[in-house]
Length: 88
Image (cartoon, rainbow, N blue to C red):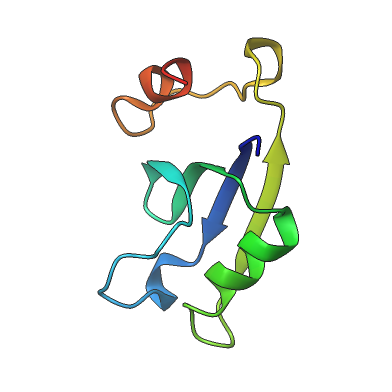
């Protein structure tokens, strides 16, 4: 099964002290902001992450193109993010 690249954002104030199970390989960009590669569909991954957060927690999960032309542009975020993208 092919992995999909996702952008995940959730309200970091709503997260528990336990790390989220990302159901794939992930790299943090900032507090509450992650890139994830997962074999799960958007719906399945969204719900599995949603179930780990409080009911009123804000959450966004969006698929991204997983090729160099479709990668997001960013700067000033967590070290190693671009290296992580290029490693797959």
